[in-house]
Image (cartoon, rainbow, N blue to C red):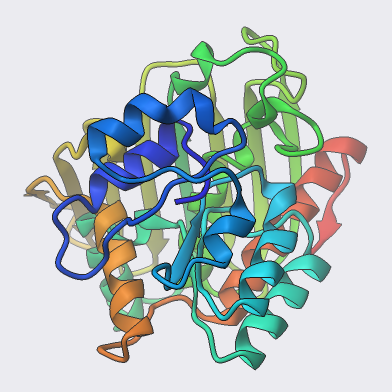
Length: 325
């Protein structure tokens, strides 16, 4: 595990006692700050990333580090033949992610990506409805992923910087939604976005909204607020029916999730799913794919497409115009 902030630690906890993946080493920019966690988990912590790459007991690296570091870290892991799971966004530019994937593919490696929301029960159900054509013609998709987790970070934290996290909550929250959009509705053609700073001192702001146009002709909308009580909603609309996912709590809490559907008869139906750890589900599916026990559900087209959407959103926030993806 490379990077031991709040999310890196959460990932370590998520796969505790897993039969498919085991964390055997830890490292971070300041290892001295994480000695207590290392002792608590009984996992050795090493001084730096290079030490991990040279360790024969390490088969793979999980990168939970600032986004701008991903390319160099991925390419270094490829040189040492390590499998790679990288937190989202994989990179901040289309050119960069294309270079990363070219290297991993040439080496026969499988790049995991931290879009665990695809593994939530509600989204898996909606994805199946879309795939079999149950909604009819795909018309529109809209979603909001907002929370108050970033209210506790300092103004100079990398998660709020222009260089590492352009367009307010897009890199931390919104990219999960656009990944889901692309996985269900296909490639995005163009976006227009705006951000605002209402409460937090983060340079990038604490509100972002995005309108999207898909190559299919469908439309979409994303909202993400970094300083409000948790709110999660995801709705897809077709001419035959609509389907909506709602969450009780942030996915890291493992709360209940709810699916509401409505067909042409106007009658709404609801279903509640039990708690699930989507982070563990993602990591274990990736581990299975690495071991040849199954497929990993992310395609290169989707990996590249979502980074390209983020890059276009950042440009649109800056210039206020529609930007082609």
